[in-house]
Image (tube, rainbow over all chains, first blue to last red; front, side):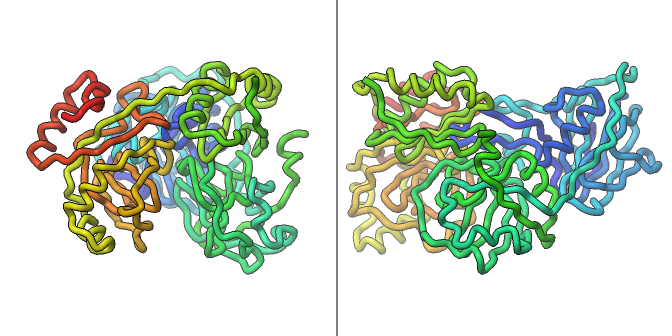
Length: 284
Length: 231
């Protein structure tokens, strides 16, 4: 696949890498794993296969060989050779076909999957692009991403009617430094504004309710799903590319579903947190 | 017999294990043992007296983990190596450090080279390791505003810790200079050489020496050997 015009932040992502936290290498992987996996499943791929992740604004991509594609995630209008295409279904493409994306009407991350998955280079066990491992943070015009030529339709066509969940309510659980939150019971009563958004984490604007009690903790291990409280009172929901250690109190924690949900919440939009017992999460 | 530990379940897949009075080298050793003995552990990170284990099958191995620590010999031996790291003192903050400390640049270099530093673990960036042992006479806090661009392989320190930046990035540590050696190579397995507990010694080189050593490093098949002595 040839990148004729890159989108705002195009990367190749699979389900990420494990086994390298000990060298401070992040997991990376699909920001909204549910949507990316849906696209793969519709094509009959392994759910963890590498896909193109687009953010807010997609690009124009040309295929050099026949294959099948599927678009899922944040709703983003696209055309195949000028004809409007449908999300969440399998679309055949021929050599020289061009798929052109516009802007996402809502949500943040849209996925383009190809039959068999993208065969871009593997670094430390994963195709997920991370600036430290790939030397670049995004795809650019002129890049070529390998994919397998497939001209016969898959035997089994998997129907999938479910769509991206753009819910603004996110379930959270108490984190290891939960007591640093001043009034946790009021967590669910206020709307929080998403102030910043990238692959490392999502910043959520402070509320007067959450002023911290303690100023610092010793550096501790963090991972995607941990919610940190900064000295200025912001919450940061650590996401797929987050570092492995951090010095802010880990006041809350969200699960895989919460990570997928908040990935799709745009800067400026609001979310509500719903605090649940950790024992429910641990299944005790 | 047995190590005293406290288990703290953070999430269904994440377990934090606190070990009392354990050095970084010991933590590193225990973490390695855990990885080699439990195939269902995906990741192990150690930091500040605790080991964090990531496993999608955590529920199934909790009992086994407990017996692992019960049967672990508390007098295990952990070995360390000493690495000799060349540094070209061309750091952006060298003058600033000298002024702040009221010393000459030569004196700063001398103090830095007299120090012995101990690697304590990885964090921040892929291949970025923290070392302790910055002499008090040299030490400074982090810069009040981080630099937008710290060159790759910069040797820098802040708040008692020394580190080498594996990539160009932003950063707030005080930069002394640059080493010609690249300490993180994702084409190698393992991608790093320095382990927690290893000792680091620095020695001064000039620009031409820097270029020569850079070439030697890039083409060498035995980087551990190069690091084991002053070149």
